[in-house]
Length: 269
Ligand code: CIR
Image (cartoon, rainbow, N blue to C red):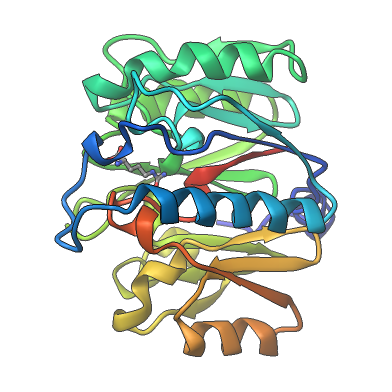
């Protein structure tokens, strides 16, 4: 697989807008497999506010939606839609309790985007399984995203002159989504967990393979000139800094308790 043209890659790490949604009162009722304990709502809200502040400081105009207690997982906005420069694909979340989250995002994003498509039955797809690397999108096949959903998205992307590669992640039970284990840094660089490092589709990239005990931090995001990553993973932070990026560490403890990664707290475009 040929790597995407560098000019296209650079363009897609520049963001002017983001949409977020703070944790609602029902946040602790969301889905989780974590054994890290019940999240502290006050702390989660403080961590979310710091996340919004970090994006704002990087030059991003952040829309903060009202929390929605009907949907405990609704703070993980990234799962509801795939936003591209050539339109948006509304997802069809693989967890039944999350399907109703999509409508609010359609409305919020409608201010910025007018070309919407949607994943349809029998397809399911979570945005957390979709990693853009310039002109190519990697689509994880996971417990949330099935082949039908991935193929619908791939076809839609290809009709918009993007490339799409399906990437099964089922071999690693610690990954909820593809982006739980993969963060594109722009240029031709990616942070990946060890279980993804040998995938043939990723060999054209310069892979920064995280140490197993820092795997959670593979879910990091490049935003303009910086890379935001979870705090508490000093080896990965140092390796990213050595590549020349400004590193912005953020506390994510209360989101990790609900299986949430850093990327899923925002839609960036
Ligand atoms: C869920 O299981 O759906 C939520 N508790 C966490 C979703 C995290 N999403 C993401 O990392 N993209």
